[in-house]
Image (cartoon, rainbow, N blue to C red; front, side):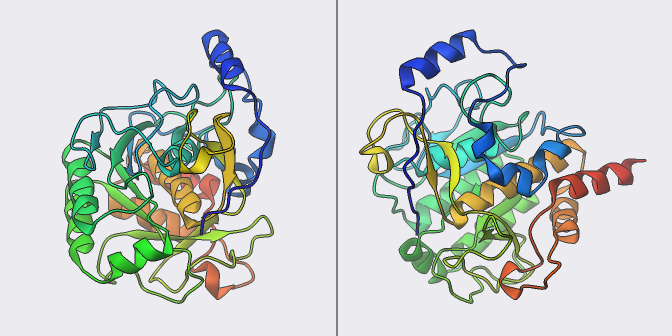
Length: 321
């Protein structure tokens, strides 16, 4: 379930002009509409860490490589759908996920990314219709890990796609490989509103469900995964392609709102990048995120709770003292 909410944004021409004039000291004009950043205290965490020198691989539908709020944020990626070096997003999903994780921040353009200092590695494993094979997704995870990804985001939250992934265990092996190479793997829980364990319990993956503005579990969010956490995933504003795709048929402004666990996962990937910048290894990153998640009402569908970036970074910082 991914729900697009109409959003009035600046035109692409205006954004391009703003980019040309932008710098790192101007607030992002759409920042006030990003409720999720404040809900998990990411801006408060930026005083300590911004995820510098961290690479977040977005294993997804690719990215709008020329988007004014993403251009300059990328490292080399790969396209396993077309088997070339240009992972252009023909769907829109991957671009939205990428913006949540690490769009340009405080540059006077568009939105703020969750990890302002991190880089994005676009790895295209899903086609224009959002579908993909276990084989290509596995290749994408392994390729990202072997090419220097520090965090790997798997926003594979579509019901039909997740059902396919659950039929085999090949992704568990790829995730283990990534962990052994030093990468943290963050995965969306899925959007069927079901109680499910998407990966083997022993697989080193951080599963993320979606929460709402009210701090409850989103109705569409899967739950029940071992040691899962939650993050905002309802009505999330982020980047979208500036050309026509499945997600931009009526609006090529470059921005829009989507909902799903696919949107929740990159917030946690951004937090993982901040903790990587603090010098934590994959196991400590996952443990710190889990230990600092908050669930005061003990809502079972939130798992361990909603992540708290400020508390997680502070805990990591205290370990260094």
